[in-house]
Length: 88
Image (tube, rainbow, N blue to C red):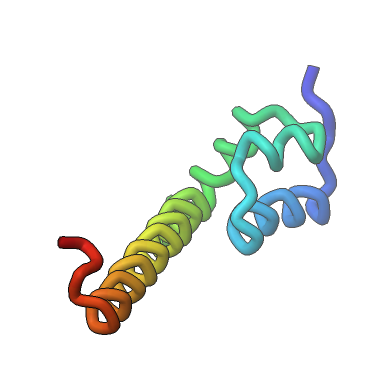
């Protein structure tokens, strides 16, 4: 049996995913809603021509990973300039 979810709660759930980067599974568990329901809400949002919250979450994670890689590359570059023996 499905339960009624207030629009305010639904907005909080979607915001936790879109704005805070919480996973769909964690958000569903935190708010006591079926993961399938949350995914349905996200799909319905994506059909209006906007980027879906799921896609935004994936892009944020990819952006974080790329920033980490760039940081590693810059650090290695700086270390190699100071000591040309490192990495040989």
